Length: 196
Image (tube, rainbow, N blue to C red; front, top):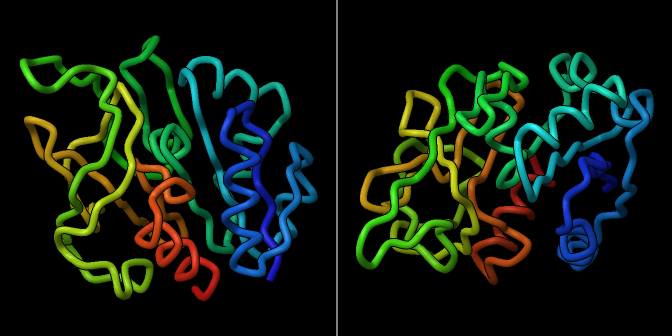
């Protein structure tokens, strides 16, 4: 199995390549539209800001390429948020593949922003991406913006409010958490993605 990781400028590329490599998946990092369009699997990672990431994707001519992919695509963290219509950060128009927008998390006692750490998943809808992932399994989150629960939410997490932790529309999936840093839960989810 091979996957192309979109070079969106994130800092998590090495750990993502390592996690996929442990699942015997060969990976390439690319910002070339033809390479991405012909990949078996595409991963859109993201660490940082939505305005910077979208500017980078536009400069590389990748926005239309990403919107028209037909193979399985997985957006991770900011990469998941970029699949939606907008982010309040900026504010920034995003790829518009999923309806809804990412909003800033509100800090509260015991809930600092950014949300950094382990949080429980709650399954909302069945999906092959979540095979052998159960309610109460933990995943590792690092984010300041989040998407509310929508009809496209497969699993949620609670951070004072319910937020989308895993989403899907057609061949596009997304995780707000970092599966490459989420131990066995993350490895299961990445393995499921490779089997889709």
